[in-house]
Image 1 (cartoon, protein in one colour):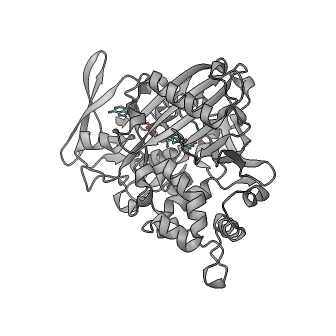
Image 2: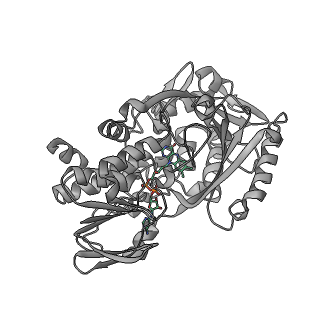
Image 3: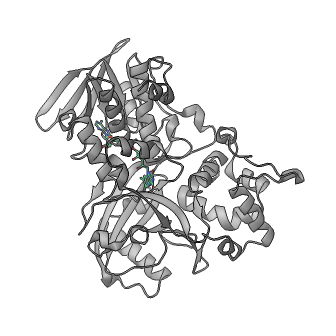
Length: 447
Ligand SMILES: Cc1cc2nc3c(=O)[nH]c(=O)nc-3n(C[C@H](O)[C@H](O)[C@H](O)COP(=O)(O)OP(=O)(O)OC[C@H]3O[C@@H](n4cnc5c(N)ncnc54)[C@H](O)[C@@H]3O)c2cc1C
């Protein structure tokens, strides 16, 4: 048996690949349901993710997987409008003229920002296209230094710094330029007249998770099963699983840890140097829309970093006519006040924050306020990050037969995503099925 620790998308993708290749793979998921960070809440219509989710046009592994498990026709590409709340106003940011109208940037700032977004380096007076394609080359470059050199001070101060502050708080100057460039590329597909083209699964990402569980075989996915021990010498031998029924030990010829690296530390004493940030994310159910924007970054002083109005991306009719708004904040450590608030205090703080930004907002229209918190939801993509990535095959570091597919994988660089989770899962499955030198591509060709 090949034991997989974690029934998020990475673990399920690994199990799917392995079972297709004829292996006896079994997933052990600690929570009562699969999905991990992509798990869903019920609504008056379709289920919706606890943390906002969409796909970018550049992501193909997750789309191909959806095709393979029979739900490819449920993937839909929709327009998501982006805007920036700054200086007490919403500034749409989709069309080129909207960028030109963005306050506090000079015409030259906007020009340099536009070129950066197009991947053109104009330093030295000779434009170079595709200048930023090799993201790893920017892994050691501090993001601030990069922006001052490759754009302008105005671009850094008025455009990116508030975004970095909202996302990384006190850690913003530690982040590498590679993360920012990856982010620009990730969110790069636009309809110049309407907004960003983003993917979603009709019915929510739970549709993909369900199809994947079916493809793996429900009997091979055990929920409410926390892996608490790993037995190994030179080779992996067995894992210990705790369920409501008690403790079981399963012999395993290989184990894939498809979750955060702290689990790898607990099971195999492998220490990963990557710091993670946590998220506090509320989903508000409302009787009416707040804005007409999908993704609103908030640069002004507010107790949250972004408002993501899901029903401006996927229509409210899918949710029984209700409007859904995510209010989100990242936390760098658990002493931050937002992390310590209980649901009632958080509700009060965030509704008051929305009222400050939108004077016509009526909190009486909020019919539900559900909170998801997770202490590790994204790596801090610091300079030198690639050196700290956890290898897929941990034979040299721990024991033969131990693999890692969690968020600290190379596939989840320079931004974590569902697509990265699929690729991380495949990478481990392919190593097991194809030997130590196999890559996703070699095994795909062999299929
Ligand atoms: C706020 C937020 C917004 C996001 N937005 C997007 C987006 O728009 N687009 C996108 O592509 N991605 C997005 N992501 C990222 C995406 O959710 C993740 O990259 C992906 O879900 C990671 O999957 P995973 O399987 O690696 O990890 P996880 O989803 O974390 O799954 C790990 C699983 O392991 C289980 N587990 C942990 N310990 C044990 C144990 N000891 N034994 C058994 N099971 C265990 C956990 O319960 C969990 O289910 C977002 C994430 C967050 C938090």
